[in-house]
Image (tube, rainbow, N blue to C red; front, top):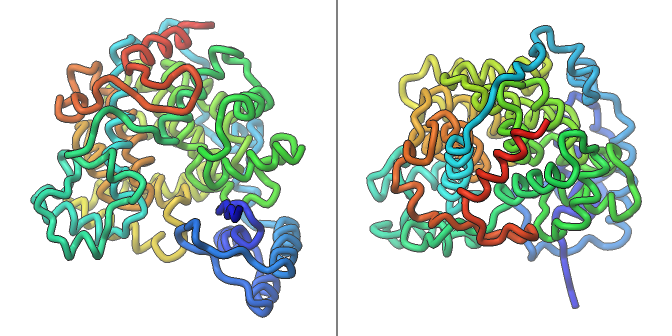
Length: 455
């Protein structure tokens, strides 16, 4: 049997680590020259099962070079700590103690779950497509920026041949095919967080999360940083080293998509939500990758606590992120660009000019800028929030999910969400997380509400 698991072998990782080194300002030119001189390939933009394995000598070299790259110091390290104490010390406006009287209603949590699912599902058929492909497909049906589900009806065959839908998702996420919420890691991880809180409460440790993953998360449902950390756990590596060892994806978007439940269950307590998200994130991520989880959790926490203005939520998220970090700069860039450009396509074009040639489409920085821009431009409107987030390309389903989560929470309840987004979900979620397959979003809201009420 010939099994080729991508995103896992040293030859898959070395190109991505070289790219991350360049972004960090680490001088890796000599290591890069040795890799290419030996016949090594650059980092693929998109992984595929057909990629051939490297010969043994090249695989061994890639492993050695990864270890050498890990020893290079980043000149940005002082501004981008990973430890929680250092992050708090770097944040001059870290939030104060929580207001113990704040609570979040079950209906609002129901809308948050629905919003996350709808935004994710909207982005699934165009995930991995280039920006020009997404625009062309939507414009072919007269729906740009998207205000409803993508469809193949009316799209010319030549356009579909040039920009085919995501092959894994088209069968379940185009308008003509939707029948409930299909499985996706953007929903699996919130379910795992809910399971984590049910078993261990708010005092869970990163080790508790690691054990939960090994017990309940199929390895084949992990990707990028999560896949590397999972493999590290199986090899006996302990957290937080699981996030660092040969993990070039440690500043990608994975931790950010795991943060929602931490925010939903800390109404009015952005500091508590951010600290809890930090314990989750450091299993797989460092620096900016961790900040993505903390930012999202804090923004959702103030929304759960009664903040009705999306701009106030974004400002609260920034208070838990070191202000001189690249993540903070990305969010500020997204907000400022959205405020100065009247057309969102122009906003997206500016962000792609900054990040498109230097960062992978799953990296947290371009996606953070786009998410902040979409939420700012949409000004709390649900349809525009998810439609604009998806319209900007990059990690479309993840950005749509997070935008939908916040916009749904702000909407106040499931009845406030347009029916054309919620009815096709059929109150049914598919997942491989034990105990949750075919669960209703109303049931998930009730379970999340229980955890929000726990001390």
